[in-house]
Length: 217
Image (cartoon, rainbow, N blue to C red):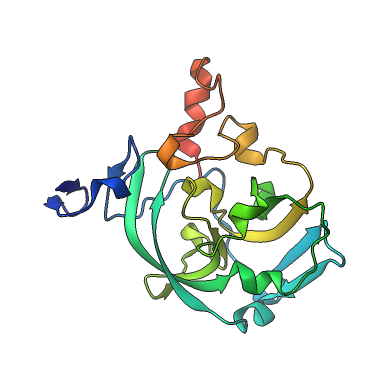
């Protein structure tokens, strides 16, 4: 039995689904750094696929919403210690997006670019997992602005900051490099079951801890 915050009760859940140091909740907390972007004209939104590709591609909002979509169900784990199980997302599989481009053979890593200069990195193999998606819905409803409308990346096997909200670009790279969050002390990979929350040495300075309260969800 596992105690579930939000529901305020114990439930029969396999504890192996919950990474070390995490608290299970039915809520969907919102944590981010900076302002929440709002879109008044979706004709101005697009998604750029660039870097180590044979030809750069830009997908407009109307074209994106016409792509094949399906449901994905997964568990998510935030670096700030909350976990939420059995999330139902609607969106575009990464494999569908990859049909739009031809990667150069040296591409091994990805940088996700979001609004206002936010970014996060991950290996290409993790980006391309069958469980990864570009989400437009959660729980059957369109994403709200605070949860990443119109499109957020979802990479459920890594800490949730790797699931960039307000996605605007996917850059394919030969070498790994830190994104915005990783430059501020977060782990380069972020496996929740290995508790890869922070880079080595993070937290040695008390000022490091001030950033965790403005972290991405």
